[in-house]
Length: 242
Image 1 (cartoon, rainbow, N blue to C red):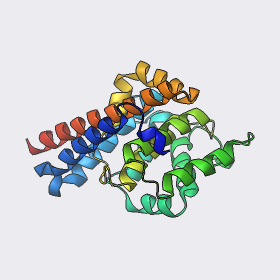
Image 2: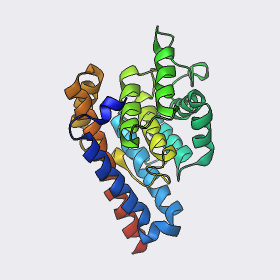
Image 3: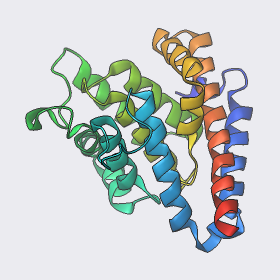
Image 4: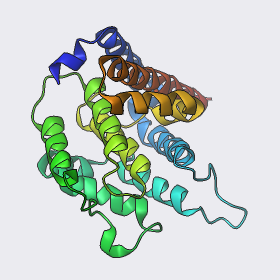
């Protein structure tokens, strides 16, 4: 994946995202109070991710979320604050972590026998194996690029057939946590993707095309989302201070 980091503008965009997330982590509120701000970030991430998959933004009047939002909330809760257990599983047995995320995301969307099980279509299982090998094999590719590739490939592959978008965004968040780019999960790139949903969908199609321009556009959009997510984190921290 090294050539991806050399695409036009990618290195600078990744550095800007890293710097912005570092600033969010150094905010005085987040030095000790990060568990509270991470919880708010996780909630916002879940709501935005739900909308991107056609779900609701918030609870219904009855207090019960729709199935997509319910799954997105479970995924965010499992990752909240840089949850060590799931990060450890990701680093030791990434396919198990991926299956776990799908089980959380799709509990109310499919039957139990399909939870955590990739589609039987030819090549899906092997592509997942190759992806996780790339992501967890000690690559020197910058974390923003790794997160973008994980996200884009899972959207393209749609390995489970249900809740694939929620899972893809969850894995992107997991990569940023496990890599140390955003260790407490304070950023909320999902809000940017939701607000720019047209650009998000177009860029995802560009990634799927595999062209240099398509790959570049997707990675740059992912970096912009990380940068915007860091600004969201600072807003959360500032509000908590006030």
